Length: 306
Image (cartoon, rainbow, N blue to C red; front, side, top):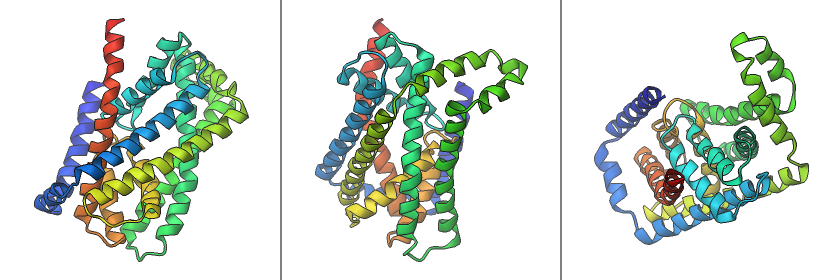
């Protein structure tokens, strides 16, 4: 696993280094030096608000008793770890942490966390479509159009796969035909049961909370842009957010490192800024989010003492 992560990091850093090199590093450094700390701090507050909303959603679907603060710390630790893993798979630390705190099934919690991510992708499908329509009013080259197409299709594929796995018997039958995978079927059944026990009312509330989280992250992006003197509207920040964060789930490099920056370079070019502005903005977003989620390492220390 460590070798795979190291390889993924290598791929991500090579892509990122190439992008920075072609855009002239001094331009990106100059943009960073313009950062206004007051706006950077406000952006962090809105990101923390988003994390709190996510914690409320996770606590709502959790089968065991757990406080909001405990859920928040587990979530933030998972988010912090997800930055270092391809496809942000490290976020599943959250399910293991919550299972330990609630003394409930790890398999069930993994299933519920997958449901949480699945609903997040479900919302992103619609947000990406809205964003594509919004950006279609701009003149775009072939690369930008291909990027928008990729981003729009990726979350849809994720949603379809999760529906097949958790709400049909197709996946179970497929696994049963593979001798080496038969033992894993029982794990999947525990995850499916946990997901299917979540009532429709909670799924609706979960969707509402995820939309509120999107609005909060839109504010984070708006103030991050202001912190480096990029004049974008709150609406534009809302439209950029799903298109760029969705790419982070593509399992090529840790949290889409390099790929996301390439996407931001393309989109910022489309809306009238430079590619260097886009890369600098995305790196600033990563820094802002990681600094906030760093609080979550408290959870690692607590588990280390147990």
